[in-house]
Length: 349
Image (cartoon, rainbow, N blue to C red; front, side):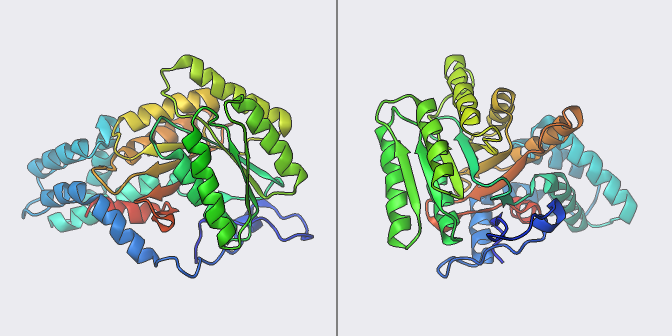
């Protein structure tokens, strides 16, 4: 099954509680979608360099301090960062003692389990329709792949018979509007329904407001607001993002239901800094990790997972952070749902 997101209850159906929503059947994949194993193979290919470096650690014959030292260096080179690396090593040593492992290859299997367990809280499907029209606000730095990711997500939603309205709130980049229009045309050619609200050179917050109002009045299932790329250090632009969020809330007091950060998988430990900064400003609910088809190392997801665990402990009132999607290429099918165990296996080669 294609568990890309959870569908809303059918029209006229009685209200359901959270466990029942969680148990809903996910939509079937499009007829031309590749098999999940094929996508996993591309993910492994994108992380091949990291996987090879980690795999070499386990080619010896002994489990000793030298093995753990090599593994520490390999995890740091994979951009896991010192804190997550130490967490994984401590967890791994405990697992090795518990099962009395005697072969390095067994240690590799235990490391995959430790990494998957660390990442597991980030694995959740994107829910659609819990509160009527679902409003998403998508943010990120320049060049991370926000607009492309929005287009792919809109296509997948339309394939599942969801009506989508896109807000071109990156009002100063004409190419952003053109990209969204191209994706909308693609969906329309396939019989789907994606509309766009845009203004050339207008106020981004006004575009987002108009889109949310239009989406609710037209009965759209999803409104997705694109925003201009910016660095977290550009404080005046971060304030503009906060304004967009406030204005969306004026249009719908419960919105935005999702605040998604698109992160370039090649940025290493800087990805964690981006997550922290955008979360402080906006309160993130989910991530889309893109460009895992090049030089990406991928270990930063371990650092993000550990930070998210600490965030949940300190701020239990906030929604837990999720990694909703991974992107490994330019095609529609290259954006797929994140699965912790799959990613751990791909990262370890």
